Length: 167
Image 1 (cartoon, rainbow, N blue to C red):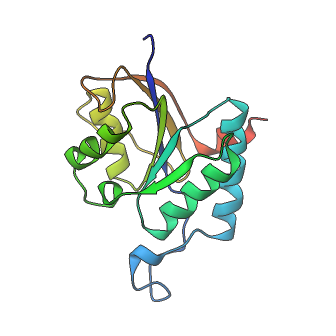
Image 2: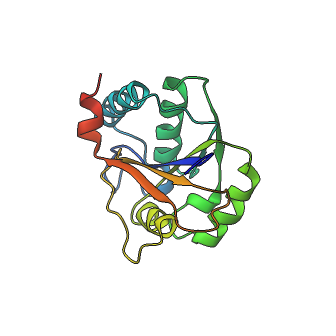
């Protein structure tokens, strides 16, 4: 694919458990271990020379924190933009419409939640079944256009443990 748009799909890092401490699920933060592990993941992404123009993220605390770690540790300090198109239960069409605003970007990261983010990856690839992302997992899909007009090409799909080992 010549002159493609790279889409990096990221599942948020390890967050606090659901329960009495966080009765509002939207407010669950990353754990200290989740923060540290995702920083290592981002170092692996930097080693792979990953660069993004924009980061779109769910506004839920754990996703926003993941997006901020990504932005702070990648070259160029990309802008983080919250969108309800990445909250749990949002539709692919909402996200596709929002992505149209970034048609001039050469690369965009999408930070969200399972199982939704796995369904987004599947739709971008023209698959029937979702990809299963581990917390902090990342994949790269190359598209000919933004918003996507047809199926993209999966360039890589790497678990966080492997990304964290890249130096």
